[in-house]
Image (cartoon, rainbow over all chains, first blue to last red):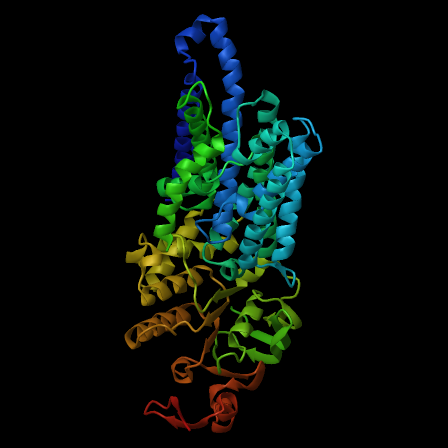
Length: 323
Length: 258
């Protein structure tokens, strides 16, 4: 039976990765100019050029989805809240406001992700400080603090937006809607590093997160260092959501939906759910990006708009089931 | 051989509020102690402070004469098992997985459950009569079934001390008796120290050897039932007139009146 459990864990992750691989191949092949295996095998120069453009884009999409989904899955378990999302820590608002500030003061396209990162860090730190109560992180206060922070940063963004010239306000819009149009290899590589660090930290907390499913006190009574686990999960989730937002802008709903789908397919053991959520989230953003290139080709729909369009109905269904 | 449990000048609370204010007691190995008192008297805090779920402010808890001070959380969890008054389950979880949680303090890192873990969990489920429910979703169990599932998790923890907070509060008479019987048998087999918090003194007396009476975070009386159970200590604890009678089997029974 032990062997059975372990095998089913490996099998679950393998099938989630297979779904991701299929989505990746599909996304490389479709677009305003279709690509065929045949042309690639022949070594057709146009086909190779298209591949060189699409591969980093698909990789960045996958990294974004994986980062948001694994962070969302861990937060849902930690907060015992199936509607939790990596952005509830104020990360999205903070990152977008940080980027908007950088652009407002004339930062280049390379420097604005740094602004987003600083913004995400500041927002998360502020939210955690607000949520502290006699040395502990109060989970109810955390949710309220996150909502408040996101509202505040939206106001900051609107203020900057309305007092900027056309070109700059368009770059700001990029952060708020999310875009993969400018994806390059180095960005995908950098995001992969953040994903490895944050994802690794979260995976290490998976056994403790399983115990959080019955509540904080229950977890503590079973030997979990509750406050340390909370700190690790929040830091890793902020790192992941901040990195994804810094490179791609705000991509909503994936962090909430992907863990749901993975839970439906492979159950709620966090040791299995976290890696499976990452793969499903990656596949979702890869497919959403393919859709965004394909639906109104040659025009592109912002990736954040696609995920929100798909995500909102899903959110309503989940909300009905929860309440 | 299991150890006895004692506390000296134990203080604990939440934030600025002190809920437990200098509690001393000693419970011998294998004995069952009922912890009784009004709502808000500090029963739950006492159990949580012993389990280390609520931090101890002052004083200490000793197991077999050894202070728990400085023990890592996992070591405490191997020695002391705690079943909360209520556990809200949001996500579905099978009874089997819930009971296996009891093995967590004994497992290291990311490892999957060992054959021994599974055998102990199965044994615990059988003892609590929930083996048939192993694959059922614990969020959809009845109150009695859920209490027995959580008791099975506690058994699987193989701890020397069991802390039960109002374990029968939401059960009807038949399920109460069933729960009590399961607990009595498990206790006879494993002989842990049991602390049972309740505001129903008579129910706890059916199984208790010792009695701890709490009022506003302090002990009114502590000791063997024959000594601690007196009308004056009960009246002081519950602020209401009390008489103690004995049934045909010699078991004491408390009646309260205005």
